[in-house]
Image (cartoon, rainbow, N blue to C red; front, side, top):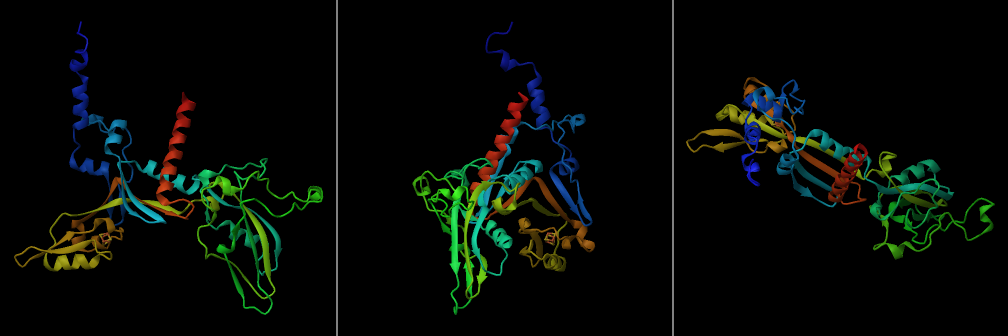
Length: 374
Ligand code: SF4
């Protein structure tokens, strides 16, 4: 019987074999198919990945996904970060997961958006419903994480509703007035409009919300709109708009006004390979073909010049470089597990926070599936 502690060192003999299987390499052409999408002149090939763990078992190679390997290889590298957008590289991940993040960002990360518009007066030329639609699309400067969802039966309160008012008029004899999003005024105490129905208006103090305390007491900073110069309407002399809007928490899946991103998209990392040297006139010609300057020329020192791939990341896959007889020596590829991800925020949340929120939502979904299964 093996002594305590010696069993694992000897093992069953299967661990070294397992390690060997994992370390074995595929032949070059198969490795290319497994890790790259090859972009030919008339379209891409090898677009489908090899998800099946036993895809190469006949060659003694383990293609299975392992959590350890994923944790070791997965990387996020931020390339550009501004107030409105972020570009980062997500490396070591499958397209399905990258796409899950994109879809969650567009449709499932919540924001606050205007849901109800109570119009007391609108003598402008813009119809009420058009005005309401325009108001709904204004990005609000309000962190959705500080608010709760409201359901049909809930009363609008300080935890689930934000109220703004818009009261603008253009005096007779004045020039035309442009109404901007910055004219919306936050009402931290809730609605100021008395309830309209005769039954409800017996109590004159009743309004359209039931705030028990001021939002100033529960929020650290005042609320407003993200962009103050969005045109809402133009008023002529004698025209006026008086209304109140109620913003609530929601997701883009229900209506695009709640989507926190202008867009969220990704592309696979481009790879450009020259299988032959391009020298002299050929080099000049290749450089001229590329509209985004992927190629450059280096001086070899003996009076010769050679083209080289200077900025592969900029490649847009226009395929100009693979035209002509020399095109067969230029190889365009995409790295299958390396995504250049761009998130453009509408302003409700900083772009980097949007991504962490998307990760949190995916994590919650996975936990839900695991708990349902168990
Ligand atoms: S595909 Fe277009 S952008 Fe990419 S390297 Fe060739 S010419 Fe340049």
